[in-house]
Amino acid sequence: MKQYWQDVDRILVSEEQIQQTVTRIAKQIDEDYKDKDLIILCILKGSVVFFADLLRKITVPAEMDFMRVSSYGSGTKTSGNIRILLDIDHSRLKTSEILIIEDIIDSGRTLSYLCEYLKLRGAKSVRTCTLLDKPDRREVEFIPDYVGIVIPDEFVVGYGLDYDEKYRTLPYVGVLKEEVYKK
Ligand code: IMP
Ligand code: MG
Image 1 (tube, helix red, strand yellow):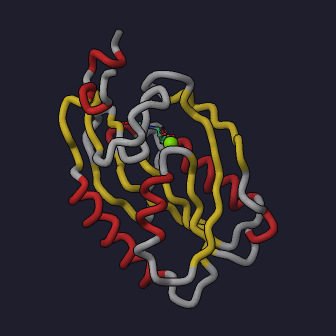
Image 2 (cartoon, rainbow, N blue to C red):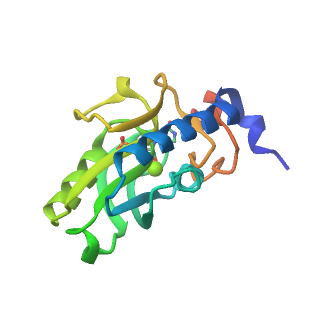
């Protein structure tokens, strides 16, 4: 059977680089959220690996919650149509600071929608953290509060990121071979 790594053109962010980045971001979060009621909010499914690494490096007390949204149909282009498939527990929104954890920002639509959604429902504060950022692809203006690594406009997989639900289990972030999605 074909292995996932065989469809990877090259490694863009290594396991070591990812861990250094996670450590740096965790330190910033520790500084900024001292004495705050923090909820770290994982955006399923892509962010789950980053989320799990990050929460073990954060030392400030934090609760966790999960949301699942869908913005992509199939393929490598966003539909811009965001649907909530799993929602956060609304009872805590007014008393806690929310930190959204994303895997990657592309058009910016998912995170701007989510920030607006949570604020409209009374969230005390909403900030955003992303492992990867592709600023060249923005369709709506969006600046995340914590950014791991800025990457060029290429479709990447691994470390939670998928193409057609595949490749999430790769331990690094790699560029997918074009022939895989341009069939
Ligand atoms: P945005 O709403 O366009 O910013 O898209 C954010 C979502 O698109 C991310 O949470 C990913 O699920 C997906 N996405 C964007 N770029 C990539 C990529 O290069 N590889 C895999 N998923 C991506
Ligand atoms: Mg995602």
